[in-house]
Length: 277
Image (cartoon, rainbow, N blue to C red; front, side, top):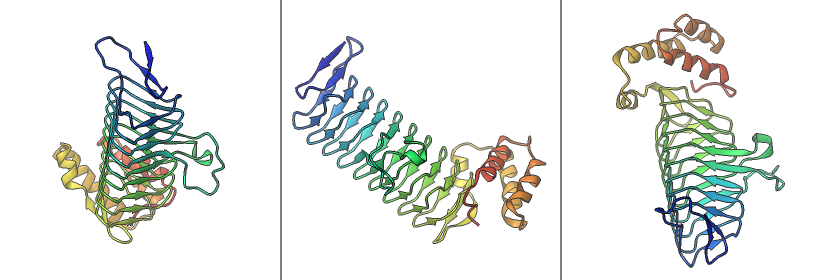
C-alpha cells in the first residue's frame, strides 16, 4: 500500500511487517519523492522532486538530495552530504540528467555527488558496497562500480570510471576521462593524469607506478600462481619499453594463463588518455 506523510510525500509500504519511512518533522520532503519502507530521514534534510530512496536507507541530518536521483537499499548517507546536485559543467543547460546509487553504500560527511550531463550519457552511477569518506567529490558522468574505498578529500573529475575494489588514499585528485582499474591502489596525495591499470599501485605528483598492489591482492585472496602471472604482466608493461600496441600483442600470447591477462588487455585497449608511466 502507499501512505502519505505530514509533508505530503509518498511513503511506499510493501509488507505489513515492515515500518513506513521515519521522517523527522523538521525535514522537507517534496511530494513527488518516493521513500520506501524502513527509510530514515534526519532533521533539516531536504529531499527534492524526482528522488527515489530504497528500503532501509538512512539519511542523516542536513543532507540535500536533488533529483532525478535513484538511491537503492540499505545505504547510509551522513550529515551535510550533497547528493544529485546539478553538474559543474558550463555546457549544462538544465537538461534532465540522472544520478543512480546502488545498495549498501556508505557516504560520509560533506560528500558531493553530481548528476550526469547530456554529453556524457546523462548519468552518474555508483554501484554497491562502496565506502566514500568525508569530503569526497564525485563529478558528473562518473561511473563507480562495486566495493570501492575512497578516503577523505579525494576528488574525481568528470567522466571517470572506477572499477571494482579500487582503493584511494586521502587527497587524491584524478583528471577527467581517466580509468582507474580494478584492485588498484592510489596512494595518498597522488595527482593522477592518466589511466591506472588494474592490480597496480601508483603514487606521486604526478602519479607513477610502484609495482603491484600486493597487499590488496593478498587481502582479496589472489593465489600465488595468479600473483606470479601478474608480476610477469607488470614486467612486460613497465620494464620492456614497449608501446601500448606492442604490449597488447605480447600479452595476447599469455591469454588463457589467467583471467587477469584478459582484464589487463582490455584496460590497455580502452585507454583514452594513456596509462600512468
